Image (tube, rainbow, N blue to C red; front, side):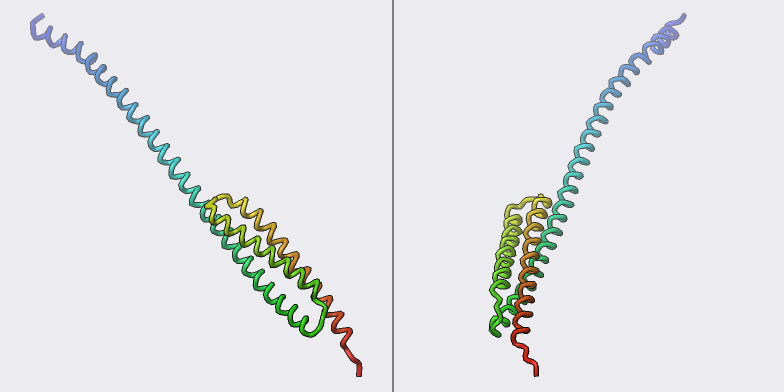
Length: 168
């Protein structure tokens, strides 16, 4: 064989080995790059998911707070009207002591509910379930006190009207 053919034969036989080694080295490096990219995407996806969960919880807490503030406001309105009626009947001479006691109890519980809401806001907590359970319990007690006050006022008015009614 000639020198050129031997040279070409040696080149051809040696070429795939050197190319394969180079290709294999690049493949390992590429695999590491791909793994690093996958880990980076996982981390960013997890971070975005956590941010989204926090946003959803923040909105839920705001919704619960709006709901309870509205309930407290409505109860205060009802209590104000009830206290006004109690005072009107007291001026007329009706015995409204029990109604006034229930109304005072409702006022105290309403104040406790408002304090709980304000304390929750100041604590910067995101546990809406805790707030919901505590304030709901207080508002149920407020409602019971208002109902009791109204019923006792109705009872005292019935007694008052039956005692002062004259038949002509």
